[in-house]
Length: 126
Image 1 (cartoon, rainbow, N blue to C red):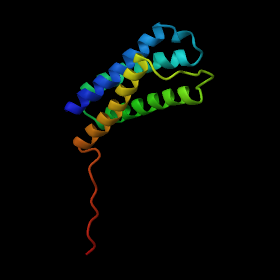
Image 2: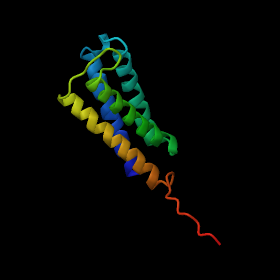
Image 3: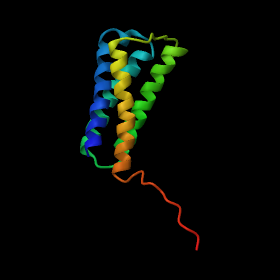
Image 4: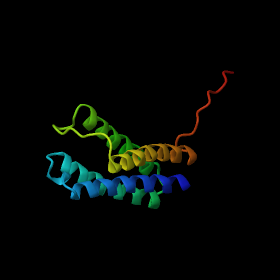
């Protein structure tokens, strides 16, 4: 239960950062601007789902959200994404990146602790 709260907070923080960046001018960047707004709205929805819906689905969404957002950032810094090249370093980038790593870890840990990712032990042959 605690890991859901951590995952929800992490996803929400990433959503807030992307919303703030959208208002700070990323909204004018083709493809990236709409993606940032989608990230902001999606992050808020996932955070609410994590806290309200006791299912494996929000936990999977948190992991996917964190991985997809962090992966897109890595692409934008290294090779560019949709014609946009980002630079590494900046408070917003670090806050978002850390929160996305936390979302991945907490989402997976929540799935494990709630039994959705139960360890499978091979059955001995008779």
